[in-house]
Amino acid sequence: MLKFITKKILYGLLVLLGVVILVFFLFQGFGDPSRLVMGQSGDSATQANIRKELYLDQPKWKQFVRYMNDVSPLCFHTKDEITNKKLKGFFFGGHNKIGLKIPYLRKSYQTKRPVWNILMQALPGTLMLAIAAMFIAMLIGIPLGVMAAVKQYTWLDTSAIFTSIVGISAPSFFMGIIMVYVFGFVLSDWTGLHIAGSWFAIDEEGHRRLTMQNLILPAITLGIRPLAIITQLTRSAMLDVLDQDYIRTAYAKGLSKKQVIWKHGLRNALNPVITAITGWFAELLAGAFFVEYIFGWQGIGKVTVDALEKLDYPVVMGSVLVAATFFIVINILADVLYGVVDPRVRVE
Image 1 (tube, rainbow, N blue to C red):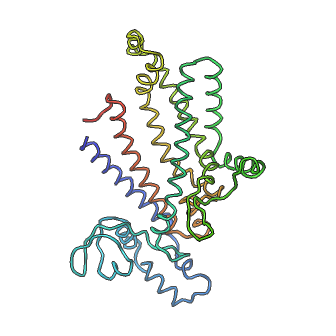
Image 2: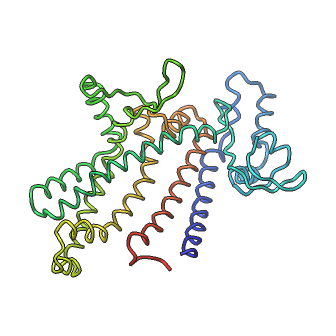
Image 3: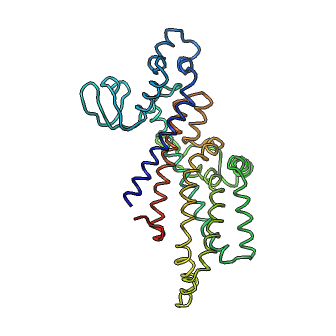
């Protein structure tokens, strides 16, 4: 298992390296961001200083090497760079130091704040939204898929298939607009839900407190598509499992229908469902971008879209790298979970 995880981590690092290369040459490798940083009122001397600060006065390959050194946890920096960039980590050596640090995603062109701080401030909102959406999808999708398989060819089965097809076909941004208009505007007096994107509220004393009410509409909107996928996969997997010999053996031993279906059948049908759940959880982090923007939800998605509008490339580049890292970590965890849930696919 350790060898398998190590191989997965190495593959993940190669994928992340490819993402870094793509992100750099897509947003930083072409053009001159110095004008975005200095604004409209800057002169040529100011632009020259900014170009030097951002290493834009150096060849592209040196710019890329410096960017790799900044975003990599394993790094080489001078003592002055560590102080000026306020790098956090462990460093060893004299003037030129080798270290292990928190990735330095540089500073926002617009706010001059460190990109890492901006994204980490927004990350809880995105994780909260993705977890809530996936929880709704699992809570409804798995039981609905099981019941559709057990009641095959009945109205319940037909209804589950039809609604899941509708859910898969409907884009999140379209469903978001419908949810906002119907439940957040037309029926807001009845639902008590509003288009307020913050996951915290500030009371009269100025203290922040968690408010989950604003999470309901965006979580349902984001969870519709994975719910439909999970329902169909659970139904298909359960139909395959219920035809197996060990299910008939369990019935012959006198086990109740409930025990056979939920304890023996569902456990062996969960493998493709886990694939969907883990894969879709990573997808939700990307799909949340549009949902967050529609609902004004304060997360990485909204921060990224706002940064794109302002051409704030370091924030966009940082958010892409953070999202890619989550994809890799979640996929590795998924492979480990396969062996836990289904010993038949356990890797030695």
